Image 1 (cartoon, rainbow, N blue to C red):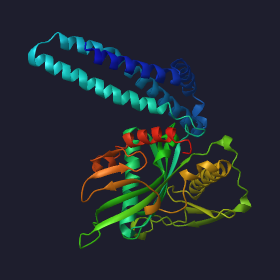
Image 2 (image 1 turned 45 degrees about the horizontal axis):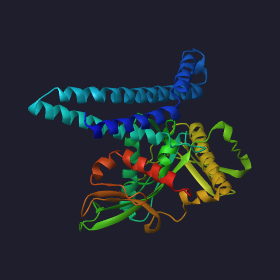
Image 3 (image 1 turned 90 degrees about the vertical axis):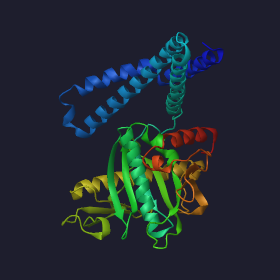
Length: 371
């Protein structure tokens, strides 16, 4: 085996050992055993919310252990692939060597992705994520762009088999959405997606302009940690105004005949939350309260840690505070303006292939103390 290959494999081994140490595989195995015992208890489902939390954590922990063991096995198999290549001659040797090199490159990518997870050590990073998307400057194109962004994050979650629960969608009159709120229900979803917060800019030929002119649109992404019972975010009833109304769909059409949609207004702060996804008014109120608590928790964190103000801006979605640019015309490119990471395949990115952007964002955040 070539010395450069041996050195590279040694570097991979050192990185993987660090990841294994941080993840604490013995503790992970112990936790899986504990969760499996809880999941086997027939009385677990008497409390559905707790049962879903247990099964979700178990599934995530099993996947995590499987991934790290798979990486270790692949690393141990690599020297064998190179030995097999050395035993071949001519074209067979070249083909086997190319296969081994390709697997080594792929393993680098996968080990680095796993390493990024170990960088998520913030107070709320382990939480599920609550994502708010709002259309900004750009009229109907911005509303369409907000819907495209929502689809991008939902597709990303589907790729990872993460559950998504949509709380509210406010449709624009002509096309797209004014805003949407949804939860990504997976451990570390907040820590992972929090680097997506900011203004996203789209440049394309507008499908809504009959003269086919180029249009720049903006949408704002906000990511909050889902509130847990230990957070003690108590909201006195007198501070909330509750309004009910009929849920609406695209084009303003009514999607049900009862006043099941709920709007909560937090009077002291002016924060307004709506939820219309559930058929039951009670369920919508519960979901809306979760969103309101998450927003108030974020507000409390901002007040306690002023340096986090850079993560959440109130300037609105416009030129001044954009963090990523998606260009579909006159050329094809998606570029993160913080990390300078870019790709030339916007269609794949908009279909949920954003892991590389997220990873580079997490690494960037670790290098920026104020972030």
